[in-house]
Length: 185
Image (spheres, helix red, strand yellow):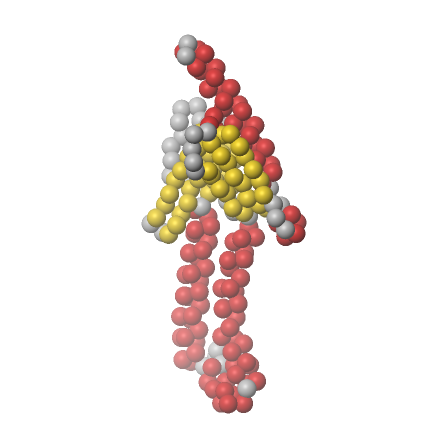
């Protein structure tokens, strides 16, 4: 990714995205909609007034092949759009900061960063059976002097990430203190 430049001496420690479960959950409606044209004739036969239309909506009919092709192309395009947004949204932890990349639409991206030396509080929130079972949750990172906090929803293994953020923040604060001592501040 080239949405941001690393500073001199800065290294990427961890890059993560939402848990895979969220991606699969967003794709489920597309799978169901892709199957819909194949079960539609059978559904129409269940109710007598619509049964006369069922033979005309069989996927093998020549005009239905065109309709089915357009339907599947539209679904594929929409599903690909969800994958693109899933892939482009990321959280990156470096040895100096947390970087959040939010892709709102194809041409609307927001990149925010938070210096680790300013981190005051990090909270994880794992709610429910499914989140506990799959190891996903939310993280809130509060910084010194800022009203806004970083909120990461659906992070895989939030406790590990929280511990990594706190450990890296502590190291970054010590390095900043050492640099200030060298400069005589």
